[in-house]
Length: 171
Image (cartoon, rainbow, N blue to C red):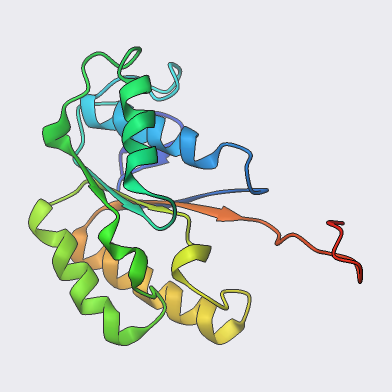
């Protein structure tokens, strides 16, 4: 497989960005999605071969917030081509680990023929992800999505959930 971002991400691969909540995963991912869509070097450092078609599944927050970020980023990403970028917030209501949803989700994505699919964040679409059965089911969904779309997949995830003491204070 060839790199789509030299030294960073290959064709038909899966990449996961994992960090604490509120650390900027969504901002970084949106920047990457826009840079991929117009063929700009990823983060100004990793050569991108060409413009790629991006399908961005937004699993939390309002679309207005993402559009505000896009407007801000367009100031530095001047060649952004909206024809190569789809933002899908409709899928927020669907559980990605529930097999009865898989075909509808994949069939919704396939007509766009994306090169890269972003899911931001995965925990919002897979309740109970820390359980083996749910994680296994979600992995099966990703396998089907990658196979049917022939796309690379970029995932965002929190590495830990916030914990609270008996008085409700964040630990």
